[in-house]
Image 1 (cartoon, one colour):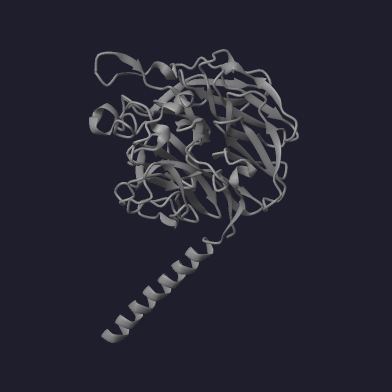
Image 2 (image 1 turned 120 degrees about the vertical axis):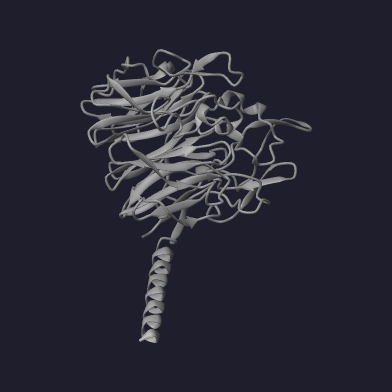
Length: 453
């Protein structure tokens, strides 16, 4: 009897193990369908991705040139066509793409002269419907657009977390939120000057009939990228070259777009940044929500953290939150951003920014994890090496993973597509040259990968 029980237990373990291996290997069927920044190695990020009228669209970040949008009818290699190229320098990237059904496709830009909103009804001809930061040129970023009720909403910032909306998608107005989402004040690192906590709305989503806004407490000043500290030794992602933020992200929600309730912030049990911020002075850098998703009746958020203490939290009602993944606790200390989340085939997929010196143990480039339930201890790794493990020259004695981040995700033709980020190409002085690049050569530039279930 004892032998029978032992053999039965072993059989069950073997069956479970075989099932997991089969499940795991099926999800490992990946194909590169776009590379080298669509032929322009300075397209560093596949910054956003969506589908519209039967085509897959990708917007890029290009600090050395101008924003671009590419599309494909099939998502296969050699099928991509450029449908937008910004006219002026300073319009660095397409930070978000949003399809309002089949009515129109919208793009929010990063522009040093003030963010723009672009609109297209066919995906090829584009109209600039909002520009110069929509009345405030310091609004250099529009990172998210979504529909809620009768209005389209856009989250903006750099100078402050501002919300805009439009009823017909053409004329946009700033929403005077009650209370003002910019009203939270924190003290600077010296502790003597109160400053604004919420500098940008990083994500917008609709969950159980309410509109949710997720804030950032700081944003990258892309105009100062040429002043990057090049002796960082991989301890921080290059784009995080900012002083520590004195606060941390907040979460707000609204039933009408005007009146708002703070559900994560200074005054609740979670405080800014889910328990970090001023209540834990050694961990001030959990300052942004970099991704959100609705999966199996729960709302998920993923954080960004300059020292790799990223985490995923979820809620069923919008007010009670639980942590379901903590990369630092797993020993993954270089996942600086949980950059994207995408439900697909009854699973939740997440992509990270994993960036450090490639010589360091465990630093392998962009990662993709998945979960069938979204619960604690249910996430498993799919990609741990930026797909191919390749590295690129960064600076003297320092190589970094080429595909350092999974920046965008979309479901198209019953397949999961992801867009990668490479280390930012920025102007630096080099001996005998006026300008150089951190990354040069044919191997640079973002990539697009396809997973077949």
